[in-house]
Picture 1 (cartoon, rainbow, N blue to C red):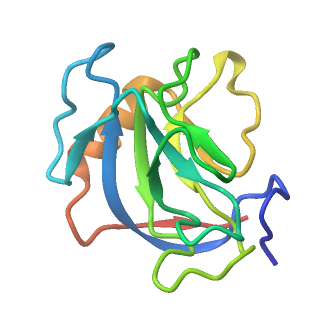
Picture 2 (picture 1 turned 30 degrees about the vertical axis):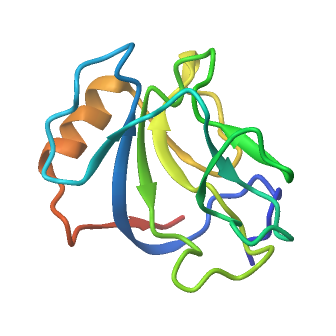
Length: 136
């Protein structure tokens, strides 16, 4: 069972929620999904004790939150998946995204990582009611 911080990718069928992107690094992606530019103080709460657990938050946060405007390029383009968000279960895991891969396609901390071209192609095909299926 998926737990916060275990580094595993949850298995299942997850709705797509929205696309986040770095407007200072790339053009708005072509997609039929809701798109939002990442702002300087955007973060994602990963603290199960916080009322904003597994939600977009403004930094700095009193609790643990990952900054979305990263120095590396991993979050230049992010597809937010509907994992543990409706309803949210504290400690079940947060910030499960499809984002850009590191060079060499090294593992993530539980997300799904794709090459830029592949993620852009996926976004162009997705619709508001699309789902992503994760299997082993």
